[in-house]
Amino acid sequence: MDLYHTTDMDGVSELNPNAERMEALIQQLDMPGFDESDHPDLALVHDTSGWSLTLYPSGVVTFENFDDDDNQPRYMTGIKRDKALHLWKALARGDVDGLTDLPWLRDEV
Image (tube, rainbow, N blue to C red; front, side, top):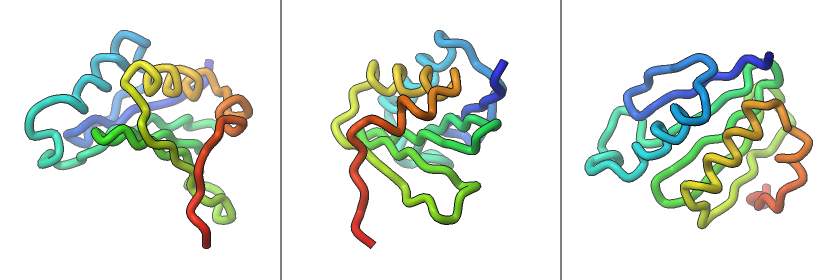
């Protein structure tokens, strides 16, 4: 089993949440005052690979690996909540190759 964890709007981490719990966490994005929370984003980190998917209320999602100094962050915009859940579930399964193949945008360096 792959190890992964989420971080919610209060900065609380949860180890290996199931799909229903992931969906409940993602619903936090639509809570009033989310933007003023301690952590105004939600993240799922695949601990084995170091890859992370961070969700923002605006529909932006970032995909990056903090363990790889040469890895430039990727992002997508307009991501609806159901798609965000799909992405989180893919990373929880360790499907880094499938996620990497998606049409991510990158800022020019």
